[in-house]
Amino acid sequence: MNHSAIDLTTAYELIDRLAEVHALPPADYAALIRAFCGGDTLRPPKEGEIGAEASAALAAYARAKADPLRRQYYGNQIFIRGLIEYSSWCKNDCLYCGLRKSNHTAERYRLDTEEILACCEEGYRIGFRTFVLQGGEDPYFTDPVLCGIVSAIRSRYPDCAITLSAGERSRESYQSLKAAGADRYLLRHETADPAHYALLHPPVQTLETRMRCLADLRDAGFQVGCGFMVGSPGQSADTLAQDLAFIQNFRPEMCGIGPFIPHHATPFAKERAGSMELTLFLLSLLRLLQPTLLLPATTALGTIHPQGRELGIQAGANVIMPNLSPAIRRGQYLLYDNKLTSGEESAQNLALLKKQMDGIGFSVVTDRGDPAGADIDASQSKDV
Image 1 (cartoon, rainbow, N blue to C red):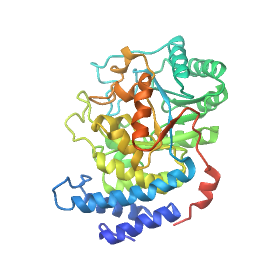
Image 2: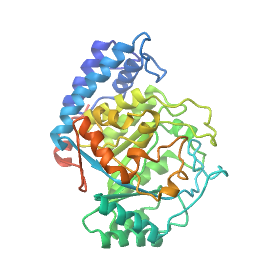
Image 3: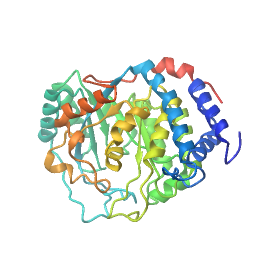
Image 4: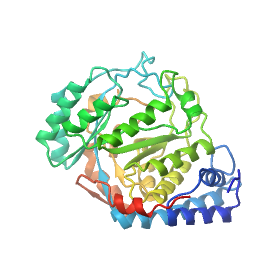
């Protein structure tokens, strides 16, 4: 179906097909996004505007299709991960990120091994059984340093999953980190379109390298996570369709998406934030595309709307990552403006998070939360 716009009847039919076979051609993904947004703007109509009711009804339909697929594999379980933001130093200069090396106003810090282990100790006591170590691409964390940290966590907490989000590294580095005891690795691809990638990064960073790293992670035996921002500068329905097609083909175990939120000390400071509504719609499409995905309701969703996390779960997400970092450091790891650092974002407020999830019919569970039925799911996806 090669077209730029479709009627709503066809949009519902495409959602039905995606729910059945878990795959669509890129042109159909683009057409679905345009149908939802009412055009090419990636700005769904707001309440009271022409097309708002139709857009909301389409989102509700996708959400209603996504929920039973999630429950088929995960029931009403929501997995929690303890996030440890271990370094705000970064050698890269991504145009959208507050940690970029050209931001000389950023407050920089790095946690040492004992500080990281203290975060894990507190998290384990609270009930976390997955630790996510996320940082900028800080040259201090060489393979020996980072492998030593991973080994120490693995030794102390053998029943826990260790997830890393440490950027682009060599194949040998990934192999060493896996051998040290890491289980999962998150590396957002950001966009599957090379021209769009070039708009978001300096020339030294390329989509080819990012995709090579994702392939190396898969070869090293990691559970791999990718993802993208929604509404980033230069994004279109066609680039988003390429993202969905990439995820359809790569089949990551995890996928993190959230609305683009500008940071005041970046070249994109005056750009408009991404749409929460489109992010929620895409979460539902991702659940339909790959029912076993571990799909976070991200901090960015909670930042852009007070109920963003809950809405993300209702749209199809099944993972939340509260912050275990030292409280004094949370405001210094500022990827974008107004980032949440308290409330349900804080790991210490796990009781509040459980209450919120109970209120919408979901249950927070304290286990590793590995992906379910990956082999079964892969066999169900049909070629298109």
